[in-house]
Length: 236
Length: 334
Image (cartoon, rainbow over all chains, first blue to last red; front, side, top):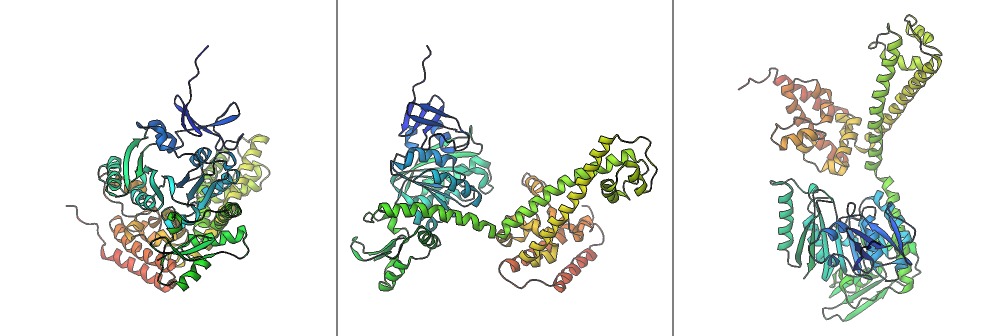
């Protein structure tokens, strides 16, 4: 008989089996974008693909404790640049659970009406997920929707000045000792002498210069997503 | 003193956290009404309760992010949570529905659809002409080009088509099924020609409403493409004229970054006869001049200026002629 790999529990509803991540499906029997599902006793687990999710990629690539990158169940989460909600759905699996029995809140902000369409559909099945059609750079547009300061924040925008926006939004919304992830897309930043590396360095220095954030790790996820780097920070 | 508020409650709180006054939303609540309130807050407005309190305490500082970080702020009760949860999708759906009111998005659909249609029309039309030419060796594929697809579409046999086009019957005729295939292909081309015309008619129409001055200056189709390339009228209006000059010259700009000479003009400006029919050495000068004028035109359109009339445009075109006349000879090579 072969030994099955023992799953490693990273958070309430997230676990790793060898090189793959799974989240405990809050809506049984439904895949969000055609990912694999499997049953384990009374629970159903949904495969979290690191090629399509920068958070999953950074969980697999981090050299520190992977569970520090994930929000705890029942926490308040802010997701800027939610797109059609692939990653958001896995975060929701963990933070809210089926029928939001944890009582968490995931505020998913995106500016594109096309993406919001899919996000609204997702939110209809998932209690605790709040779809917001707004400019993620504007704190005033997000504030009415969030119930309090966030324990966990992820920013994934494809516009220029991502680091400045990240500093502004974390200072407005992140709780003390809350976790913040910035997925930096180098291709969206202004052209700079020295290419992508210079842009990552520039971002790093902006985060290091700001008073309220401590940079814990710069995670290189270029294996999964080209020209991307994730900055893992915590609010001081 | 600070004014904290959310969609259902407003409070005046001092620095010690003492509540001086508070006002809750008391009238009948519904998801639709909550959505309206959230929308107002999202745009930076005060809720009616907050406004009343602000009138009472004009010295209070409005803090839109205050309620969120206020530890004493009451949580939503069950009924309020339900209302909030039903209101947010209403608001998001409203935003999605309102996207159709955005002329930029509508123009984008039209222009992109027309571009795809034109691409497939070019291939299909060329195939139709070559196919017919294979059988009817006497047909002039240049002079009679435009007659070929409609003639094939309306004929019942290749001989009839030959007759209509005024040439000899073919030495080898296609089989029945082959002829049917050729004919239905030609019908497709004729239909596509009509569809393309209706697309471009709609683009002209929309562009003349949306960017009248720019349309008058560089033509409605070019104006529409320019708006799409820039990512909307607002972004085009805020663009420096140097960027506008090279809109549509992506490859040349990428090469320029690696050290090649800068492009003189983008694809849209080049499609104007003032540039494409001018000698090579004045094209850059005219493109720079027209880009400047175009950027003024789109600013007039976007920021509510007076649309340009024909005289203004005619004067600009006269000036381009003057530039051309000033440089009749190519510059000497150094």
